[in-house]
Length: 372
Image (cartoon, rainbow, N blue to C red; front, side):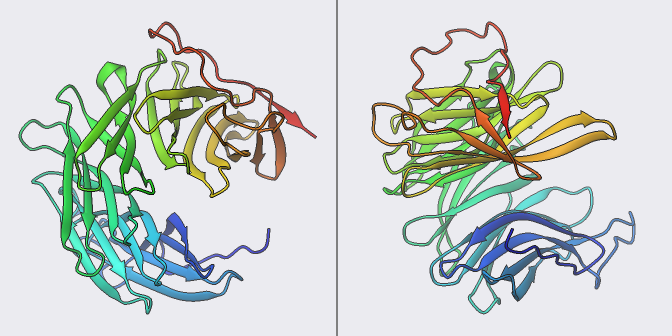
């Protein structure tokens, strides 16, 4: 560990998302209580602002920024930074307790000042949940909203102009058979947009969408290879166009396994794996670097002597290259737990030879063995 920093602004400070800038600065997006407008006069509820903190690579506090749509409740979910020092944050805002939320996206300039703010609403509650940047630096936001006409939730994807904040693209997804929510977003080198999340159709399934740069839906896939509800939390695209989805399988005993899926650029399922850590686990985020190395991070809740205990785990899969398979011939798949114990996957990532044709059971994921 190089350094640990604590930031305190008010009685309530949380960090929700993190991003790197090109120069190595670290951007944290979260929420802080608003001391100038601390409580609702009717309900007594506290109000929160977007709070964005910038650290140098060495851990020095360089700047902190704040934004609020209505001087009421604001909760960011995602952050992205471009190569020019601009910072984009998305999430939700409410203009009063117990009222409908809205999409709320903010751009901060290199000096930390707010460059523009964007509020989107469609007559009922709406939540921005994820953000990325296209090749031109325009922010693309995913989330979900409640359709006032039928009361169901649908996915919404928007692209804003980086300079003006003007809406350049607005796409909605509703398959009319259930509720859909988006939790992760990514882009490929051609500007296509990938969104993952969930639908409650088929008992609850991971939903992954691919859009063109202009917002045309190219394909939609539901993962129903398990007899359990599952959900996609994060998506990433590697240099060869494979789409990686990390998420969670919900099991009957209230435990959960990590879920890892891979699709090709045409939406064909290449791989489906679940991994068990002996508790209630969930893979929360996936990333792929320029060399094709895959990293997945998430958590596991277990019952210990002092009650429920949480554990952070990170899995790295080395050298995912070529169409002949996933993973190097002898590459171990390592995970880290706090405090820094090593774990070894006994099952290497290999191509899925056949996919389950029905929902015949919810098997345990691959078990892990500790490495001393």
